[in-house]
Structures are given as C-alpha cells and as structure tokens.
Image 1 (cartoon, helix red, strand yellow):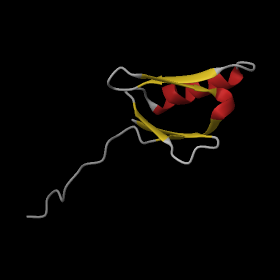
Image 2 (cartoon, one colour):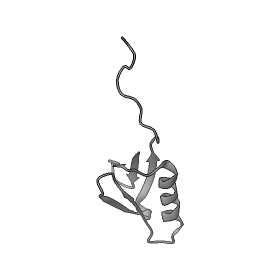
Image 3 (cartoon, rainbow, N blue to C red):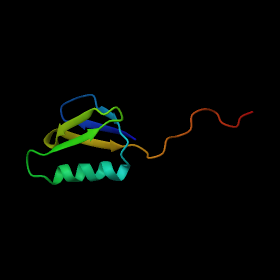
Length: 77
C-alpha cells in the first residue's frame, strides 16, 4: 500500500510503500494524534526502513488503495 505524507512548509511529500492495510495505517495515525504534544507518526516500509515524523509537522496523510491494479491491456487480442 502506498502512503503519501505531506509535511508542513515542505513542498515535496514523502511516499512510503508499506505492507500495512488502510485500517492499520489509519489506526497508527489516530494513535499518534491522540498523544499529547510530542507525539510521532511512524511507519515501516516494505524494505524495513522506518519513517518517523513529529505529529506537529504533519500536513496530510493520503492512504492508497489496498488492492493493486492490473497493469497492461489484458484481453485485447
């Protein structure tokens, strides 16, 4: 699943490919936002790298689709 994270005052977004479901990513966001000042939002990507962002810096989080779309022209013979 692809997750795009916007950071305040930064023009480019961070794109993280993760094995989590949309519900799990949303739960992580909710947990991070529920912590009083000083909370962080953290995700681990498919290669095992961890992205940690202070909640105060979050601009937006866009959660992609759970299922991947087929690639190609499929069945156009």
